[in-house]
Length: 315
Image (cartoon, rainbow, N blue to C red; front, side, top):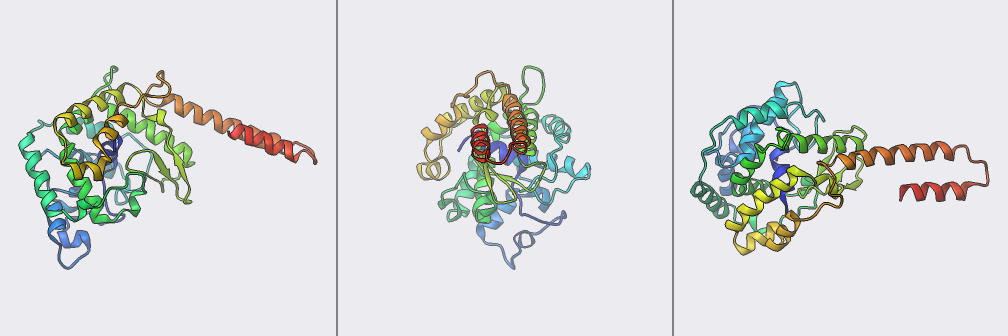
C-alpha cells in the first residue's frame, strides 16, 4: 500500500465497468432487488456519487469529491466516462479545470467527521473489509463489493491528506496531480501503443494490457519533487492516525511496509517526475526498431547472431 493507491483512486475513481449516467437508486447501482447493509451504507456515503447523483455527506472523501469534478470535465469534453476502469482517452486537458474548480472550494472537514464515517463503514461492511486487499491484482478481478468498500473507506481515511495533495503545487506553480497524471498517461500510451483498454494495479506498479500481458511500471516513474512532497504529507498524517491492527494488515500489509514504500528512494535522483523514464522508453523502442530492420539484412546462416543481438538489445 502506498501513496499511489490514493492517487489512483483520486485520478480514476472506482466504478462499475458500464453504467448509464443518470441518478441511480442503490438497487439500480448494484443491479439487485434489495441492497444489503454494506451496499446501502456505501451508497449513502457517496460511493460512485457521479453515477448515483448522491452527494457525499461531507467534503471529507476528497478523492470522491474531486473525482466528480474530473469526470464532469471529461464528460463535458465529449469523452466516454462510463468505463472508468479503462482509459477512454489519454488526454489530460480536463485535469486543469477540474483542479481549479475543486481547489477553489472552501475545504470543510475535520477529523471527527472522518472518524465517524470510517467507523460506520467498518461496522456496516465488516465482512467486506475482512478480506485482504490485493494491491497487485487487476482491479477488474477484485470482488466489486469488497473493492468498493475499501475504496470508500480509504477515501475517508485519506481524505484530509488527499485534499492537500490534490491541490499541491510544484515549484513552477503547476498542480502536482496534473503533472503526475501527464507522466503516467504518456507512459501508458507509449507502452500500450495507444490502446486505451488497459488498467493499473492499485499499488500503481503493474500495467495490465488488453492482450492479457502485464508490464512492470518503472519505479523511477514515481520520482521527483511532487512525489516526495505527497509522500511526506501522507506519512505525517498516517503517523498520527493509525488504523487498527487487522485493517492495517489487510490494506498495508504492515505500517512499516507502507512507511518503507513511501520513503523509498528513486533509483535516479535526477529524475524529474518520471521524464527520464519516458525518454528511456523512447530510446529502447528506437533501438529495438533498428535491431529489427538490421535483422532483415543479415544473410542466411546469421540467424544465431541475429537472435543474440536482439536478445542483448532487449536486455
